[in-house]
Image 1 (spheres, rainbow, N blue to C red):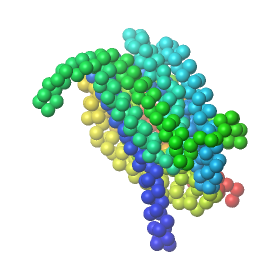
Image 2 (image 1 turned 135 degrees about the vertical axis):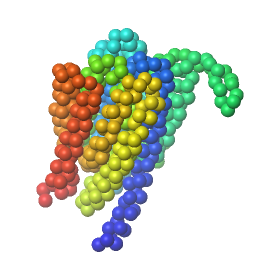
Image 3 (image 1 turned 120 degrees about the horizontal axis):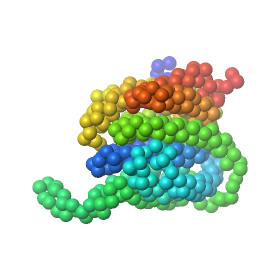
Image 4 (image 1 turned 45 degrees about the vertical axis):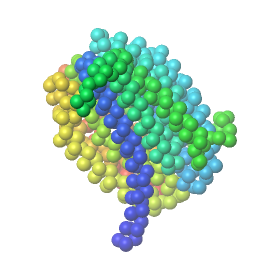
Length: 461
């Protein structure tokens, strides 16, 4: 039996890593740029950091809602590829183009029309509301190309091509960093290797960071659209662009619960951040920086989630029950091991990493404390990430919707409201509620795993 297991699992590990590493590298680059953005803006002062971070969770709400459409197409395309139905996979991409156009237009109009009110709803300090509003407006002008990047990237990953979205992401990040350097700071003298020379700059500060991101997103959206159009396996060329309900209906059946989940949890993030913003500038800055730092340590988890969703969808399309079980047996321990390493690294390096983004000792102390708290919970969160990914791959998005919304609103939001608004505790109590939320979701997914509710191929047996 051991020999058979080795022969089965070693090739599977290779497939998992081949799918996961481009996504991990892409997310690593995105996080590196986020670090650089935060550090560059942080050099302008705590108020600049707070004005950028105060509306970040609204961006999560928008981006995650759009991503839900991608999950619907991911499940459909992965199953079609697993069943060997390349024609259905190709036809679904033309429908993805329609969704990109519709969602991109809607999510351009809404953020731009509400940009003046978002900082007010987020309880941003009145002194920085105008700057936060202008930053938000500029950042969401290119929502059509951003929507294309999100959905078309997911379409390519579902077809097993994780390298193309990675390349697009790297290009976007490089452009973003270069433009940040030129747009945030004024013309100045730069010293390099003992040589001094003038460096031109716009001196736009926070608005320069927004403009740099907007331009980079636009280029990325155009680039991935061109790549998809020329793709040998999932190009929409030659396909009908009329609405096809035989494809849209099953995609939306998967996407809608996931959209409700992402909308509900992201709205929870907005409420969570709004309560934190009410704690003052120090707490807002520490929370913003801690979120930025923490994101790097979730990269292994979410990279593996992409591979889990694709391979689970393939196995489901092929009706291969044994492969589905083998995937879970491989992914879960591997994910937990990676997140233990990640959490340990975060715990040790928290003060140094927060210090990159702020020189304020109060911000550094507070940010380090909450990061060390959350580092301990990362292995538990990793289990949830993998189970949710596999369930997305097979089209089961209803249970993750229930679990996530219950955890967000039943634990995090209620707990944070009681701790920060009623009992007047600080940021540490809010992050404790966030950790309790993550632990509850882990428990619910564990029960789901033990009872076999995650695997549709075992249902009814």
